[in-house]
Image (cartoon, rainbow, N blue to C red; front, side):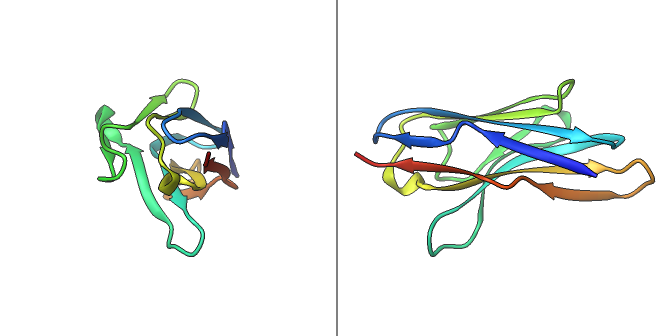
Length: 120
């Protein structure tokens, strides 16, 4: 079983910054990739940023130039630094991890989410 715990959400004014953190714990062989998704009210969940194998990263167009994903593989943690926040960034942000399980195979785990509200 793998647990993902997010932190760092909250209320911020437009133009402000927030840093989200996610920590993975449990029993597993390794983590292939970690990512951040978000779901705004009335909208579908969408990928925001991902840290994949080889240290590569990918971003949604809406996040490029404003958000930075960073991963500490030794600590099984991933952060999302969000700058120049806009009201449309308001959403619940979820951390995910693609885990190689101890008994074989891979599985994607999700955290419970952390709310980010961008409002004046």
